Image 1 (cartoon, rainbow, N blue to C red):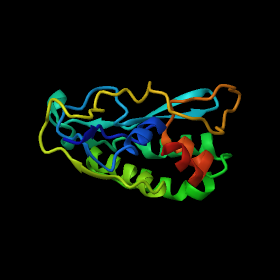
Image 2 (image 1 turned 90 degrees about the horizontal axis):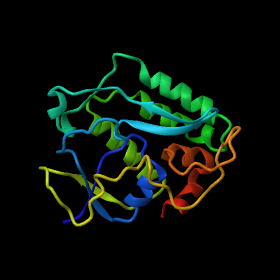
Image 3 (image 1 turned 90 degrees about the vertical axis):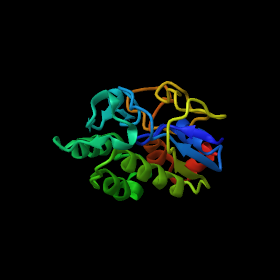
Image 4 (image 1 turned 60 degrees about the vertical axis):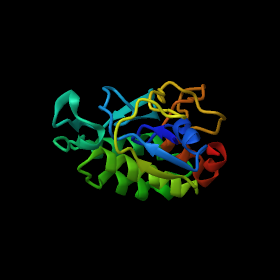
Amino acid sequence: MSAVFPIAYFGSVRYFQDLARFKQLVFENSDHLPKQTFRNRMVILGSQGAQVLTMPLEKPSGSKTVTKDVLVSYQQNWPLLHWKALKTAYASAPYFEHYASDIEKLLFKKHRFLIDFDLEITQFFLDTYQLSVDFSLTEKYETSYQEDYRESDYEQLEMQGVYNQVLFNQTQFNTRVSILDLLFCEGPMGRKLII
């Protein structure tokens, strides 16, 4: 069996470091979506430190809804809020202007299903960093895999390596941020930190 990973909404740098270790992997879409998960939230660095941006979801079957059936909710204009937060946090980052339109398009493209949204984001970063990773989706829930990353807490796991972050008044490097932080701060050179 191959490695299995959860999906992620603009996953952390560490998440992509782990993905890049494999040529082939499987994304879990047959589990019940846990509460408070990076599958629908990301951490960015703002003027007040780490800031969590959460995408609202709809679960048609309540807590029994499997990941592949979870819907993205657009009752609020959260893409605009996330985009404004990203602009505020990263407008002065060296590569913000270069990637801003790509990220804006990703954010404002309305996806019905969370899985489709997260996979399009992940594919964007695999392509941007030229990571040769082929993936598929689980067809049913399996209790174990040889390499199982489904329970990894990527909001707590620290990335390997450092780079120049936009730190505002902070002096300490933050190791648990979204891949967007690396993209806006290091651009294509961020690939060296991923692989």
